Length: 124
Image (cartoon, rainbow, N blue to C red; front, side, top):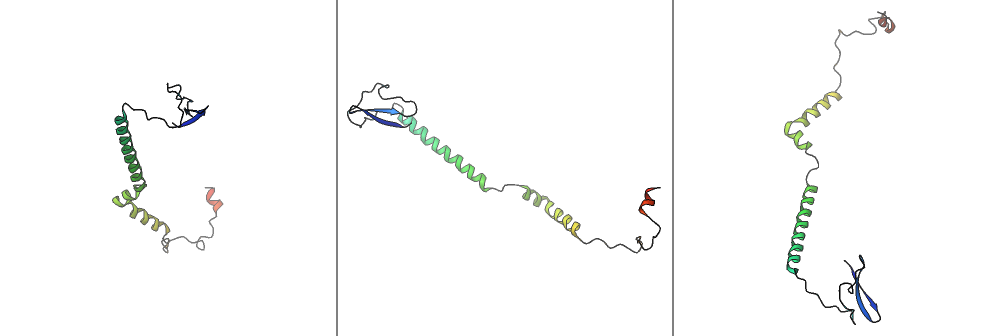
């Protein structure tokens, strides 16, 4: 809440910018100077304790958020290392990239088979 002092005919009055509530509405007369007496707050200790608890809670939440930001984003690396999945996947990748196995002498070559045509195979 932001209070501003407004002067009318050398008399000063407090005005809330949000709700336009004035010190005159609260039952206080206009002052001759801009100094206002501090009003006694009935539950001041309660509100101070409440404010300190809220600060502690916000600090705790801030620490929790920062702690979550520092941990690993994914546990997949941990699981794959734990069960050996990473080594298995890397082995399969290497096998796929490896050179093909050479064919033996029993493999059919184009030079050996002269009469086979693709279209003849389709007309069985």
